[in-house]
Length: 229
Image: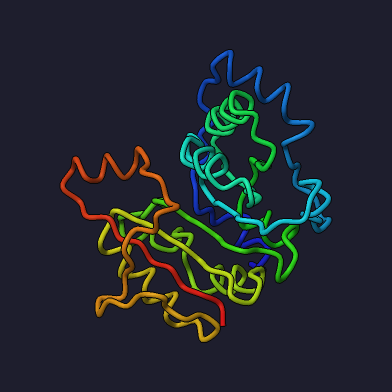
């Protein structure tokens, strides 16, 4: 099996189409031509995509999109490019984009690995944020975890100098795994001032439903922010 075939078959997600509400369906139909990004083999020019020059934040797996919409609304000086394979989540985000009149959001509904490899230019990102990724609890499924050395290396290539990777999780063992993987990349520096290696929750990250769920279940929440040297 070639590396290409390996990436094609080993997914870090389970595609769940779900049922779109009328509002979500309408939002996708109306806004995709202006806010949607189709998968292609061509590198994106973010200045063209957003019709302006501004730092670009890539969010992988934005769920229902509410926290991404909040960040876009609170930080109009930044561009936000969200990637999510769950179509109702894409529709939910576009509903928020329409309601709030957000012009600094673009969205993809394809596999983040493919989007990164095929469309995101090297050195083009201000920040990559991955909030509450699937931890794939069972040991035999750990290979499906998104945060692996090869993927982190690809993220680092796409970061501008001084750019950051911000990951949050409510599963301690996965947090330990992520910390180990990020710390092993010699092009990254941990921004934490704590001995345990995690950071206090950055003010720009809104609370999410996944975070609330984790807290209800008695889980902690761990934030990691690493900076490109």
